[in-house]
Length: 103
Image 1: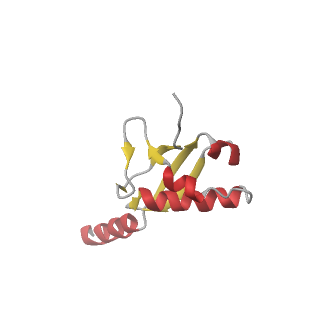
Image 2: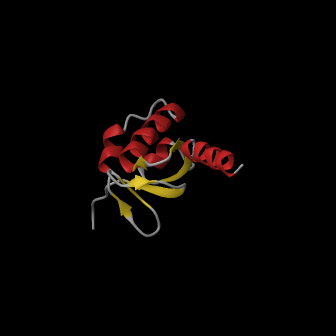
Image 3: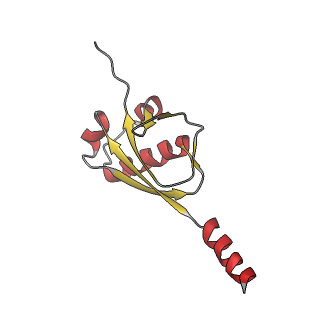
């Protein structure tokens, strides 16, 4: 009995999906005014999230052609800016922050 429960738990854990909610700012908000929700595999990198966000924005707004802007932008939560190699292993809310200039 215990081993069958353990096998079920392992199988469910292997299929775990993450929900990544991304708040948009700047040029991204002009492309789509609402947060974007992505459903991705467990242990997804920030770089993979950026690629998925680009694809989602292109699908939501076919006029969106800012893939390079996504590459130059950062993803952050309320406490931290993440590098492209950072692995996300649980659902999270992030913001994409485009580069800014001025003073």
